[in-house]
Image (cartoon, rainbow, N blue to C red; front, side, top):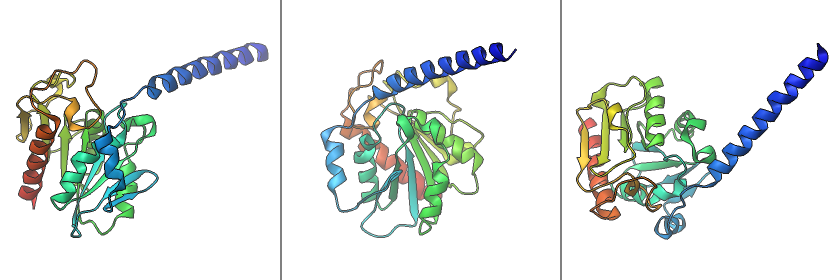
Length: 232
């Protein structure tokens, strides 16, 4: 019996080791941030922590936006989008996820909120899988979060839809639109795609955008700004 149990244990450990190796290989091939995104890291309004980056507005804000990056995308790819939002007066916090997968640490917002008590009003946002995990967090913490902002993502969890802003491009071929819940704040960017919310290049299997990345992000920034102002 002991020999059988030992062999079974060895077999299970071998399978787990193989699965871990496969995951590490898979996760090591991810989309990198471009030079425009990386240059923002040198700005004076940037504070880099182990788990997240804070982008501070010129004037101290009571409104904070926590952002979860998309799967297999270097988190700094979203710095241009969030830097522009900080210029609108929001404190933006970009999360670094383990192995670039938001599902590995969806509750990191707890730590962020605890460590940034100067922020009174919190919004949580994310792109693609990051958006789904952001909405999952909000569904478990409705009392902490004022609104959920999803970019190329759908609601995952039970959230009042009036508290959700969904933005996606008309040429997005990554988003599963069958899972959208018809939020009253659902907006399609004409000519946009899935990839251009971040600065990491064209994502495999995505549609071709007919507007520039700057245009798509500018539209997104204004929509987010309007959404939050309507909540105040």
